[in-house]
Image (cartoon, rainbow, N blue to C red):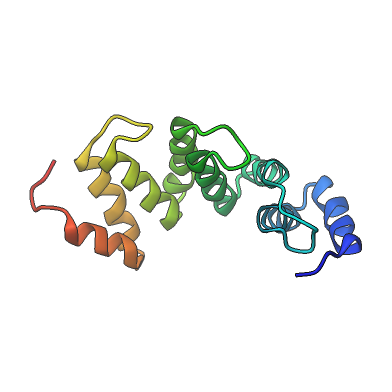
Length: 143
């Protein structure tokens, strides 16, 4: 998308007033370079954090992925797990999927196939296809 400073300025005003939708839109715009000359991962992380701090589940999951990848923030799997946990315990299926994956691999958290299976099951019960697929690949009775 072509640069649109007026739109970004409007979003910025709303986001600074605490509008979560504006914060999320700005986060995605800065992450992908939408309506801008180029992407700015640090600004993306800033706006996702603002929304996550207000309890937005999508923002918590996206910010977790940024920490997992080291995109706009220092790579920190433990911080990613904290964010996924916040979203997962509030019922967010993607938070549950990513938390489950971390438990299965032991990345950022003590490895636990039992907890990995638990969180993937929670997501699968909500109809999450990737969670169902991952569960299907786990050996039965693996803990």
